[in-house]
Length: 165
View 1: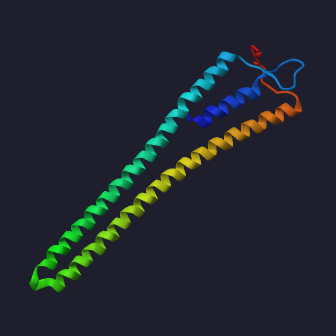
View 2 (view 1 turned 90 degrees about the vertical axis):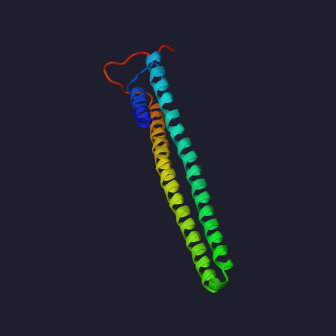
View 3 (view 1 turned 90 degrees about the horizontal axis):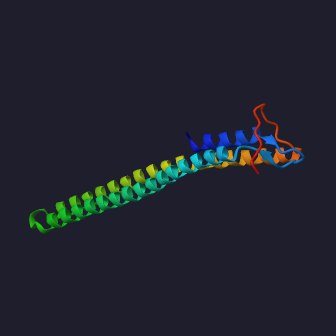
């Protein structure tokens, strides 16, 4: 289950819990059941955080690989340029060809960097959206909880259970 769904489930559970008699802020709910819900949420969140960390590591690897490939292409271009220049009969032609190869290598390197940046930006934007939704869900839950506290009671279902504390 998605951590956001798990948070919504916990909020719904709190909203449905029976109020403690003569108390406007306390409610009754089975402690073991609430702890079980929170343990499930805790077990899901590290997975998402690990995926985000793995995504960042993957981004760094892709950027490094792109840089290495760009450097390799540039070095090949410079090597080819130097080889062509060393030949006396085609010196002028070789200089132009070498410059073209270097320009192509730099263009290709920039293209690779741009692709990596776009990929990483998209992945981070997706993760940002996930975190934004999670924060919004938490904020809604807290707002509901505060609103219910202010009116003095939590309205629950017929199957209300007292909290053990």
